[in-house]
Picture 1 (cartoon, one colour):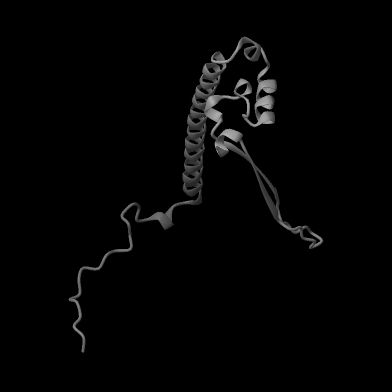
Picture 2 (spheres, rainbow, N blue to C red):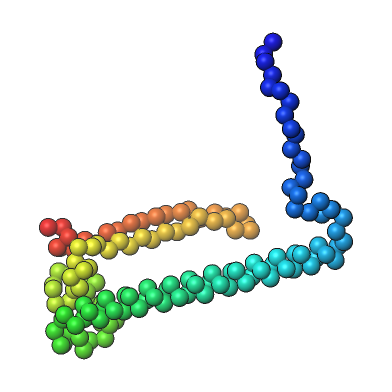
Length: 142
């Protein structure tokens, strides 16, 4: 017969937080739930505000980096609209230093197209197709 451990002190199932939790009235339960939900909402709002501040900081950093890179370029390019400049950079895939940011020359662009599978009320399903196309810059391939 295997040896048994001596019977130790059994733990109570009561956590000690509140012994008469079941005896609370419905009004107190509703009050606790409302308090919990309001606290949860407050924490969510604080987290959202923190994320917005972080996003603003990241956007400012990107703007500063863009401005620094723009200052390194000729006047004709500086006077272009950002949309036109970036479209030309993507259009020539960084093959020309005139339309390219040096920090972007070693990267490649990837376009991913996905069709998601779903089933509607008539039980007609669509297929999921993923297509990945890479555009490499000439400098990154050298």
